[in-house]
Image 1 (cartoon, rainbow, N blue to C red):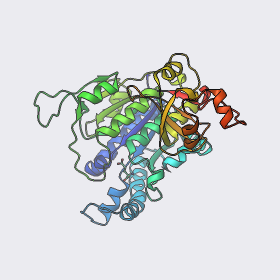
Image 2: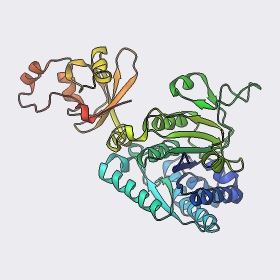
Image 3: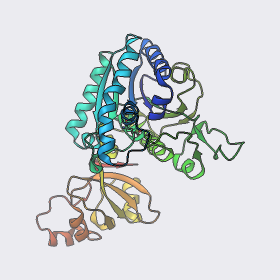
Image 4: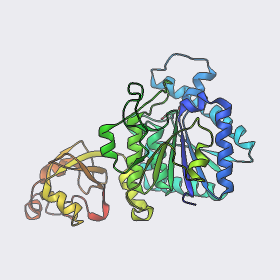
Length: 369
Ligand code: GLU
């Protein structure tokens, strides 16, 4: 079989709209997958929506404290639905709540990975959601599309299936154009981003996703060796048809490299940690990074954006086309880079006589995108 480790992302609207029948069908298919030796992880939204529903609140919560409180009310209710429904198929589930910060620290990130792998080993289905109650802007991932892609990348999943209430990505807006068609296969996400739209019939206000976050998820998967499919979760047997029958369903995003080609540490640098700033470099330095796999030196740096410290992860952009080309861990703070940018090593030694590393980012701490 092609797929062994599978991450399934379920949005708030599906959890609410489908009610018991939808989750029953998911559990049934997960059971089938498990009987075929697949390992399944679910990333589920629906905490805030469940809390609101329980309190019969119909207006959109605006303040963060309201959202966090309804998430606190709704998360156990959500889990209860998973526990009860999955029990019917003899399946056990476990709750994992994560924030962006949990991926920022390598030790925490390794703990998450180990726990997930252990749960899978003992046959439990992990159900992941963002820890909505504790997040602040700083540590928020913000949407479960991104969260599911990061999880899929971390645990070396073979495929991420994003279940939504539309059939996939359309070549044009299907609510306007009758001849709009589903794009079945995607090899180049940037091209696609330019030309297409995803139709979103989802009106439920707790779903924070949409096209943008799905493309972000697709990019993370693309670079991490994980295939991704956006498919309609309402359709019968959609998960088992994708995984076990290899049917063409929804929009499939192919991946750039094999899982083994990008190491766990690289994934952590590229997608785990929060990006604290940007470094814009000239064409020569871009060439040295991309073609010659060299470290980033001060001489090639044109300017920086944002405030960051030594040890933070930053994005590297080519100043000519403003395209992000790499991410890496910096040896200097943003202020220090301002002082040494464009300079040769000899000149820098005059400013910082004790400097240890001449590289702003060492090649070992650099991941090309
Ligand atoms: N974590 C939120 C919830 O469970 C939803 C986030 C999202 O839909 O992307 O309510």
